[in-house]
Length: 313
Length: 70
Image (cartoon, rainbow over all chains, first blue to last red):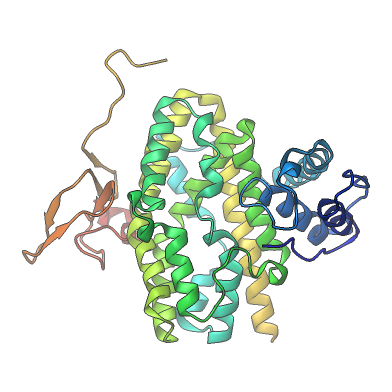
């Protein structure tokens, strides 16, 4: 895959210098806006995943690229923390975290898909979701070597299922790719990156930010817990909506798999993963909540944007 | 710090208000006598009776009133 389209002055300068064969330079610009900052950050993170055909692999660790990444990450993390209000969870921890997630109230894209969305809206949603679902569970995999024994084993128990239990045919990202192909959409990674709104870039960048910093390992696991704990019931609604619109069985099967898988994963993420982490490192509980909030809040922002756009259309 | 007798790693976990987690490969017979094989490292068996995906949990317990949860 090639670098995405620039969305402002900074991303244009970054992508130009990444593509060139000369020294990386000219990255001291301020981003034009959120789109500009987040497409730049997304592309720099992507260098750590699959990379780009038009960028030399050496540039993953180029100091100038890392300097810019760190500057944009600091701004992004400060913004995420400013949106969050620190909360003390009820005891015991697992019930407290489940209750915190359940009490968060936000707009539901899945309810819209279940009852009202038309085919075009659903295809647009699938294109947007493809940016994450085609590398589903990859960002939290960065957290594995940063964990103590009990949460490390617990996270791998969950990840083993996400990655198909050793069977590539059951790997969740692959199931989504099959669903995209059957729906007549492109299944190559980030084929639709130029079409996604900034909220999707923020969702993806938050997971990479949490995954790539050992300091933020608890936020990474808190994000996972909130993601899994808000997946089973919405996945059922998504599957029903896709069936109502007669989308292919492969795409429906992806969501049906998540009804059952995430009913397990939410228990693991909250109890055996986050629970074991805060038992081993109690001071990390605030960052678990911060990560959970960030997941819920960024999903709300994306849902609100799409519902507003679809109502206005 | 490692616990004195190793880490707890039970085969079955009862989740308060939620499902029963089963680690490993099992065959679960549902209320109609139909056998279902587990397919994942850990499976969640419905305890509230309201799952639409019996015998597996589908998260429905979370929308039940507290008195109706297992």
